Amino acid sequence: MEPIILIIGISGFILMLLLVGAPLKPVKLIGHLATKLVIGALLLFFLNAFGTSIGLHIPINVVTSSISGLLGLPGIAALIIIKTVIL
Image (cartoon, rainbow, N blue to C red; front, top):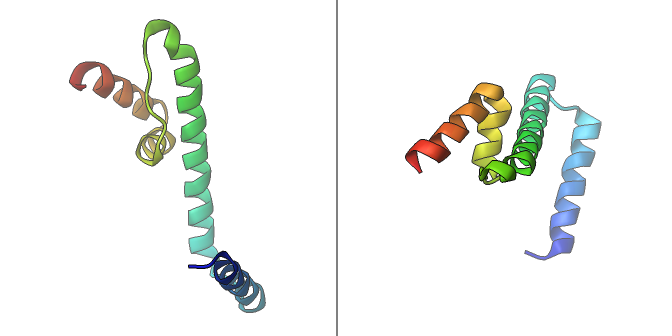
């Protein structure tokens, strides 16, 4: 697909949402989930930055970011246990 067609499609969708209005609950839910995903990625980044001294590295991808973002510290602990014990 050509980039110009994709840009026009996204712009049209945004314009339609601005004119008609977006349903508030799904947009809020998507915003909260995206925020938690980013927070999870940041937590994993800091874990990897400080964990290299003890030989601990958890890859940062959508699945691990989701687990650490949605579950918080217990999720990070679970990822560390999975990494050290199972893998």
